[in-house]
Length: 266
Length: 288
Picture 1 (tube, rainbow over the protein chains, first blue to last red):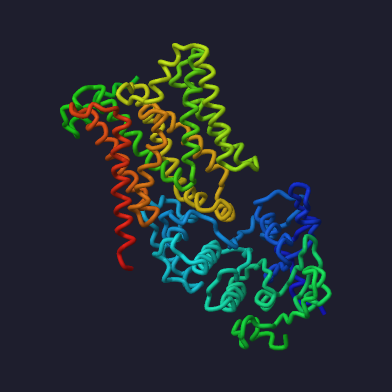
Picture 2 (picture 1 turned 120 degrees about the horizontal axis):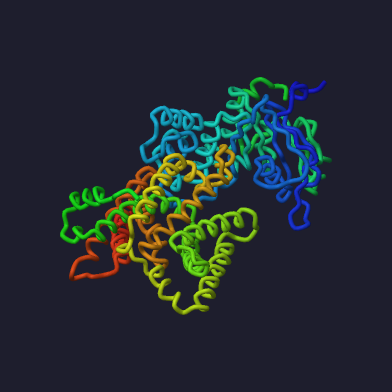
């Protein structure tokens, strides 16, 4: 029996996506799907082309092949949380301004609209970071910045939320809370989550669909069927042992996310 | 051409200094009051985009623009901004399409422009005298035609900034993030570059090729030290730029000073920068 998500439409469909740089193949005819409403994790070792695939999706690099985005007849809204935001930390910019500048037409010289200020605080509250609103963006720690970037992505009410190594540098009282938070938000808002990670335990715990990538797609499907010893050995190039897709990161034994409550058999 | 005398009269009435009673001083004040807000707001983006070298390259293309005008028997006051615009858009196009680093692309353009200007000037030594005034600039020779052109540029640029300031900040922070947020990065970058090239060319006439970058960078850099938000950085930059322009003009006209106006304006702005550094240092020392 196929899981329900295989019957629904694709949010993203990569078709024969190839990326070459200086004669070196980074992605080789990648064909894969992120089902609509799913939490899709792209996994693979360092240098597998995971981030490159995301950058191709975002239109940041040129590629051969096709990438279909399903936005129900309109251009889908994409929220993007990069792995690392390289920016000038000396720039005087508050978190509230950062969350408003993509939405507000009136220049920031005249302050932030009351409505946008309220929405910025609501978005920060979603990621448990409302206390950061008046802080300078350049003064945030890595984990705080990741939360603010997630709040910004959520403010865009995305159809597709793209995260590059979401747990890298996150200090969300442990990575688990971050995954739980994303999972709850995805279910509440109905967006598709597409994330890249090499952290198998954390990501696959909440993923409903996995794409195993090492320049080519080695396997794709539900975590329990896809993360087999053979597939993992194929993409990581060594014996990884069978990954339990319900395994918990660190010493955690309990997951409070709704996905776990609804699928106790998993 | 419309008569600007009432405008100059108003400026003289608002700032009743003896030295501002001469018409050329009123014209210089008008020119600086139009130029300063534009360089203040553009400077913020230049600093955020790390484009000071770009502004330098445009200003140095002034030589080539003037030389080309003199060579083709066209008015250098118009060939210079036109050439600057062309160079600015050319640099942006190459930066976007080439894998070379930004400073390498600008460096190539910079060298080409200076070499081209010098090559033309070397053919005719008399041209060197004309070029000298662009090297040092002289706001005191600004005419009504240039002031009217500055007014047009002021309206265009301030409208553009009012519409695009937030998006330009976004691009300055991270272009990929801005693109994902449906900001039209390329359009904004080209429009910003074009306007920056024009403003640099007008500023060259005020403070000269050697100091034009300072007019953009110093007020914005000082504003960074004072400001705690992007909104307040704008007002600080405007305050520093305008006060430096007016104070520089007045100081340079004093009998005891008799200095070049452009250089004096920049020195006042640098004084502001020194104060801003001290203020930033004090803020860091304060316990949180």
